[in-house]
Length: 314
Image (cartoon, rainbow, N blue to C red; front, top):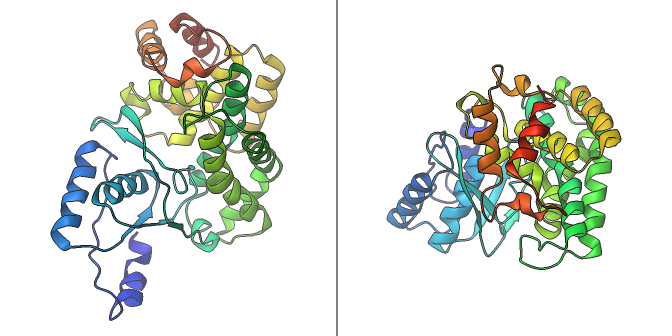
């Protein structure tokens, strides 16, 4: 944010009165309450959420609770948070508390790929991981008949969006990272940012979510993974989900792709160097808890199955 603060203040000065609240922690319930209270104290008329996924998720919750319009300005394309009505609520220790589905999406999302390209390529790669999960989870929901995030069956358009999201990142992901390394956007970044932010956001809300993100939630139970980005943990969830589904050939293909776009393919890559049965059980228990999205898979999933899939990623 420091890169844009002076310019932002200059643009707003004399036009509107703006109060800037810095955010640098977890998108926790306490953070959302604090921002909501500050909005009431200042008499704000609109909320502008600027930054990464956790800042944006906090802004979404606060704007909804305050009954205010919401403008989202992502500075990275590391997840599909900007367009969605979902906020992931974390505990203060970095573990996932719950998924909070809000009744409305942001009113306006402004994405400038010149800004996105100036961020480290690691963030764009993480967004590729998050976006890639969209197709596999939507396909699981289609097969099982599970409802989407709106509580409705997914429509053919939802699956078409999810499919295009996957094809975009598979086709342009490598080139987009190379462009990002230069700090300047090109055609590949344009395609991948569209997939990471828009197609993935539309696709997961309309198609549904399943194993990849449930396993992400489980992984956050371990302290050693808290340095890893959301999409990096989701990448591990994708691979584990493919193993759960018995799709070995696709697993091999996607594992190679993930490595090529600088994403984790082993538990050690996200910090789980010492793998123990106790750690695997903690991850599996959280991923498989009652009502969790892993049960949207088209077959019954047990903790033992998740542990077996994770062992294959050692």
